[in-house]
Picture 1 (cartoon, rainbow, N blue to C red):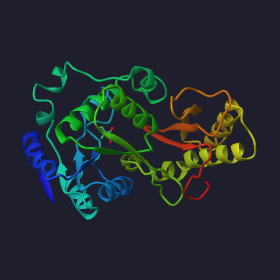
Picture 2: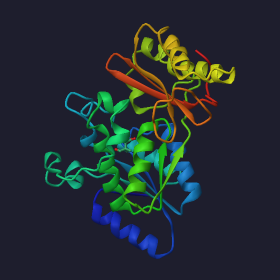
Picture 3: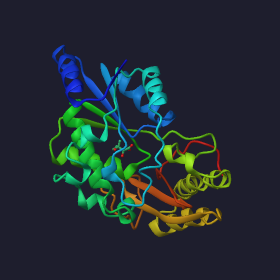
Picture 4: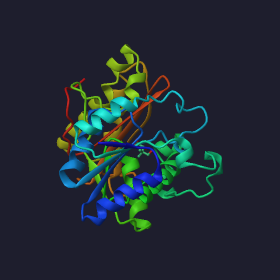
Length: 291
Ligand code: PAF
């Protein structure tokens, strides 16, 4: 497996791969890879001839005061996980390579405002344009036919899918199921920030989703009632502060007054400075034990 840091090296390597008729899949990441990322690489390796894992902590998607500097970094660990799961290339560019004129000098931004303003975007107004801009750049560098994203960041998956559709990127965006700890916590590179007590209480996110799935299964259709079920569960975690617990249409992210089989449950809870996200279809299932 190769570790490449320059755009030109990645392009010339992958030009040859494509010229040989081999398909390229990409797994965009910010590193600190865990089992959730491994599942994306596994899926990409099963469906594509050559898999590229990108590792880049993208400053454009962090606002001032967020955890850009503290974000966990472990390139050696990332390279070995990517190799173990069948990646052919890790592309780990420096910030200069991605933003040669400086991050403040990036004048072109890609944004999907209608899908980016609510939920995560409400507390992080510049986040999704940073994500879209770097994903568009990575697609232009790698030229994949398929790109793999976790459903764990459901709004990100919706925003990126829409960008690809609206800008006619020749890329299939593949959403992959959330991977969970045994107690139900969705895997995330940011889980390492949790104290032992916060980690214990963080199970309320998946438990809140499971409660709402159960209520939907029992016939509750009122969006507000399902949202209250989730909020009630989150309230049992004294260290957690609910940001949102909502029922939306999975395709548009529009709030749903009445839930149906297309509805998605989204929940975000802050534990100190760490915001945790989770989501699920109202039909479930949610893996992991109930909290
Ligand atoms: O989900 C992430 O890790 C990042 O938002 C992404 C998609 C790699 C863009 O930096």
